[in-house]
Length: 106
Ligand code: SF4
Ligand code: F3S
Image (cartoon, rainbow, N blue to C red; front, side):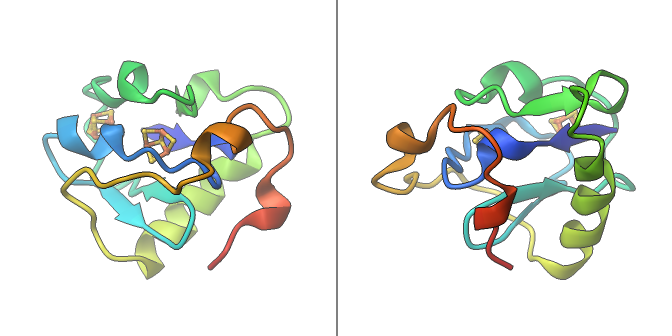
């Protein structure tokens, strides 16, 4: 499965949802999560993310392994998002800021 990681938080560009053939992205207030039971490993979303926040499960950077379970958990709670939408107005300022998990809204 593919996993959305830290840099999506407060960036949430949503380019990823446009390419997913099985609609497995779920939307929270400032983060998206992939449903691991729906993802078919098509790889299309990974290069689409301007924040480079998406990784194959096996390639999740060290220290971000907690996002694997977090995607599974949040995708069960949040609704599916199927269409791209405008990012938050301050998305650019947050792009690349480390350790944004503390800002995750749920
Ligand atoms: Fe969707 Fe493919 Fe990305 Fe999985 S790898 S979340 S199926 S676009
Ligand atoms: Fe997040 Fe990147 Fe998608 S910032 S919403 S994973 S395009």
